[in-house]
Amino acid sequence: MDGALPRSALAALIERACALDRRIVFLTGAGISADSGVPTFRGPEGYWTVGSKNYHPEELATFAAFRRMPETVWDWYLHRLRTCRAAEPNAAHKSLADFERSTPRRFLLITQNVDGLHLRAGNTPEHTFQIHGNLEYARCSAECNKDLVRIPEDIESATPTLPTALHCSRCKAPLRPNVLWFDECYDEERYRFDSSLSAAQHAALLIVIGTTGATRLPQMVVTQAVYSGLSIIAIDPYANPVTELVAEHAHGVHVAARAAQAVPHLVTEIRRALA
Ligand SMILES: [Zn+2]
Image (cartoon, rainbow, N blue to C red; front, side, top):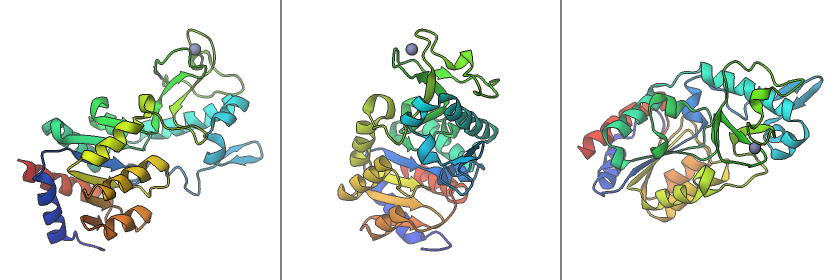
């Protein structure tokens, strides 16, 4: 449905969901951070130039590329990290943080964003599954320990030599960004794979914000929710495979709007229904 919020369908869905004593699960993607100016990972300016060669994210965001040229991969991540650190959480992020503060028992957030904006807005790691990791942190690439190291603000560049701060303090192997790469698998320990699917199965309501379902776990979360008969609301200005799946679902509504506009209103209505 284009333009205005489809009022009656939304109200009925919220009423149906809030009658259940279960969690409201939010699944967020790049669309929620676009309103904070974080560029889309796969956008037209998404490539990274080294010398005369343009690398695309699918080439650089791999363990294979990191093994071959850790300095170049780190330079790209440091660039992305600076962009994310310069961005501020928007009204949509803030409304989700308010929701968690007021009703933690009913709140869960699954995010595919690595920009850390949800945590900076005030959501807690306990209620936020970062299923693709977080750019703010690094970890030992040799897996000698599981510690996360916050990347210092003052690292300008990783070329030509990887700085000492980007080496493991114990085994001296290079640190790697704490993100899931294209040639790696989801797991529970780092990326909350099983917990995310379980949450989608047992929620009262799934709210999908700004994701096209191009990656596997977000797609599985939505499909799981459809098969479980959950109420689902998708917020995205444009139609995509996820919004189409939700719109065809018996208990689904697609709200065609930007996240920063629609999410605060929706959260207010849900909190009112829960009160
Ligand atoms: Zn190590």
